[in-house]
Image (tube, rainbow, N blue to C red; front, side, top):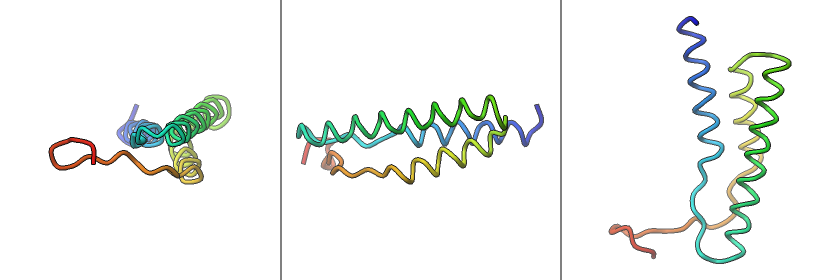
Length: 90
């Protein structure tokens, strides 16, 4: 594997982590449902892109771009849990 390929694969891993790293929701039940639905949709999108990449393009740059595009289409719509400077709930 050359340096460019390694960098492309590292970028793909970063895109996956960014897609699945959501801010925690507050304790409100509605926000928790929104959080889990969003996490589920993003995880499904990552799985689809990775599966397509394995069978069609085998290009990690394409996969990273596709994951980022799908992530942008599924923004956080709930209010993230807020902590004060001591790490306690606000």
